Image (cartoon, rainbow, N blue to C red):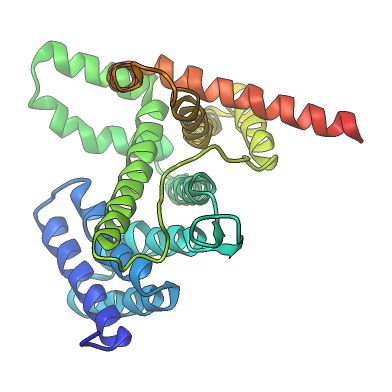
Length: 307
């Protein structure tokens, strides 16, 4: 290694900050949320968690010097902390002599579950911060999108207004799903790059069947109650969180489908068709998530039955 790990970590933080500033300044949408995470994941899955923490501190320090505090807060909450959280969980392991590399790694699905819970926490903070505004967070979004909708065609504008009014929670939840999955994609790509040059710590970040925590069911029930019996703001928050929390269940169901279809002769055709349907429709994703919920309930029932 030509440069010390500390210098490499500081360089990763610098590159991440510069990528964020470039994408943020140009209004590049989701790019400024996941592209700056690439050098962070590269340093984390190459050298380790300590190097990632150093890169995070270096990037944040540079951002505070060069950017307004608001932009630095966005960088911290939406890029640095999620990258640190996911890498911290993904690099957890325990010795397992029976495995190929000698370690039993923390399930990727559970690491993503932590990321989903963090996403829900961010949404709750935003909802509480704008609770005093007219219409709350939902009303604020409607105000900001009104000018953009005015430039659209009449029918399209009306359809978008209806969607934001009646299904605003689904839009927020979809943004949470997309953000989480994009960060995961960047992490997986980073690990694949490192694997090609034999610099990776963890062999793979593939999502395999995992055991979801029991408290996730409690959170789903709580959000369901809020979405049915709360005030208008609580209903919006409850529905958004409920749909966001379905992502780990969807990933579990998808991992089971991948595992069950391994021996199928037309597996690739089936998976391609499945993903095309998932991109076009919402209900298959909800059906897969519901299957995972049923499986978790059955598992809990069996455990109670044994006791």
